[in-house]
Length: 422
Ligand code: GDP
Ligand code: IMO
Ligand code: MG
Image 1: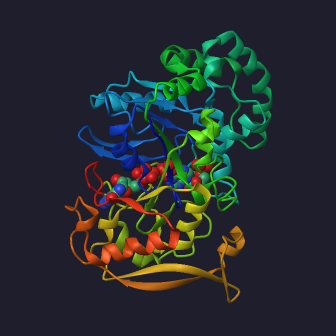
Image 2 (image 1 turned 30 degrees about the vertical axis):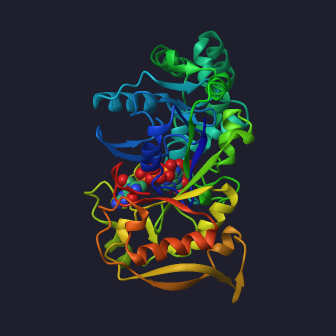
Image 3 (image 1 turned 120 degrees about the vertical axis):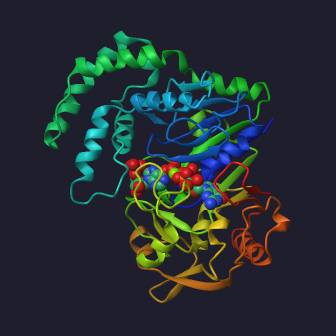
């Protein structure tokens, strides 16, 4: 048995989808442990190209069970849409389950997110209602998936909750909802999703007792963690590895392996500080046009990603807060044609070198200290063994390993499942 957590190490979109799809070949169960359909996890395999938002990326293996876990906020309409999409490409979804304790993300959460995002002071959310669903969970006025299994109870809960929700909707200029309208949706969701809802703690513990291989799939990355990231430009859940255990009801002692996924450079979507951000001309040259699956546009919103050089203090911070046992570096091939690579090896704040992650406000002010490394200027996309990588790519990877104190186990050299050197 092995319990593995796959977690994003930067600002999200590091390539978690690809790595989870690859590692799932040895797994019996994949559990997405937080977030909602703000995620866009790209998978390219023999079934086609997918951008998964709610369904865990292990769905493509016929023997692999997958669970949308307790820490998630699930928009049932989006979930149903995604099931349909995946099934339309011939993928069997009978092994897909949802934690009864996962929070239901309601249409009014999406409405509130949109109103706030269009107002002054927005942080550039994905407008999927994530913050508002998590807020309702925290103030105990959310419905959970298990409530769909007892519709009388669900209706009683809605009768209590909807008057409060409506006060907010009206105050912020969004349209009111009725109990009947939301309850009608609950009936449809119960009918279509009821059979997939499970009691999650016993479900996961059974897999542990049966010595199954379990992989926990994180959403987003360390810098967007609600507590440890660049607050307030963060998401409303905890992507960090430790949260996989809290969300699963699994003792932390069960974890064997934590794979940190990073990109060979930096990218971010939404607002907030980004010390190594490139100028727009440089970024445009890097980004691609959007016609290829691996061009730098958000897999959820289609927004052009902000791009920057590799930021080692950020990668090390991710290693610190997550406790990686190994690293996966994606998109090394995207640097194949860059002659000189800038790498940030430290920050200066008010003229002094600092050895900690500063506050969000100060991170905006830091001066990155760069080293320049020679590129490898050759094609890496056919390489499948780490020892076959060009010498300068090995130096780049060694620099990351030495800086973070974590070995690199996988290097992504293309978007599809098999484009991995290890
Ligand atoms: P996630 O949110 O962490 O799953 O990452 P996204 O799917 O949002 O973004 C990662 C992007 O990089 C997607 O377009 C992937 O197809 C692409 N990708 C992942 N790994 C590699 C790689 O090693 N090489 C290339 N060229 N593209 C990759
Ligand atoms: P994956 O899992 C990149 C960003 C948004 C915004 C902030 C909060 O594919 O890596 P939210 O909608 O969560 O309230 O937005 O977080 N964001 C992401 N950025 N990848 C994601 O997911 C993201 N999910 C949210 O752009 O800055
Ligand atoms: Mg993504």
